[in-house]
Image (cartoon, rainbow, N blue to C red; front, side, top):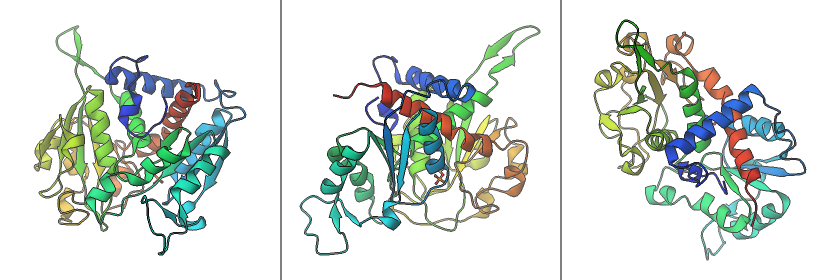
Length: 338
Ligand code: CP
């Protein structure tokens, strides 16, 4: 693996199809969960730089733990609050607030580190700008070393890999068809929009949709209110409905997440509290397990009774962030550099 920016980076001739490649990466992550230090020298004498242009708790800590499990040294740099303000536009006349161009900064980081990991967020002001993924693409262009997304303007691939690991672990696929027969069926996974007080990025929802569709091993339904459509680039293949109750029917997993509007970009059109998942709504499901990437606004985005109840997977899901990061870093470490 040469970089990790989206599900497309999991495609590899050694894995076969993308569904098989995702499964292989999931199994690799689960093997690290069983034996965290089995490759403790793989990253010896290697260093990962983790650059944060935006806040993080889980991504920052889990990536550090994963790298250290592989014997790598990690250096964290909070560019957004501690570094020079970076310019990303080519041929910019830097007479404004930006102090250093990424084409000057990134090659230096490429000399300090063996892997560069970066978190950026979208502005939510201009969709074309955000969806161009300029920030992470400029780091890829100028760093000269493998780049890992710790969440970009439109995607959050380490989170999505984690989510598929968590679903794989928690799905009991066999069901009875007769007295002694069992059969297997795909899990029904529902991605549901939830209310929030602030306009949030579409990254987690986009990325989850992209990964579940590429995985191809689920009946995948997305439900949201009118005006909260996501980009077809990521949702194509899913069933999409504005009827949340209908979507939740017989679900095995419910992924809860807020996102702001895509078409009239970055806005809040609806804050209807009836979209918040609670135990009453959970009765529509097949005793579904509930996921959320966190952080979560309790009793706005997701109810206490769900978060503190037996169906919540949010803590094991967040714990699995380590194994997802470890699987990805080890794939990159094992790939020969040109
Ligand atoms: N889910 C997630 O990315 O959490 P952080 O923002 O805390 O890293």
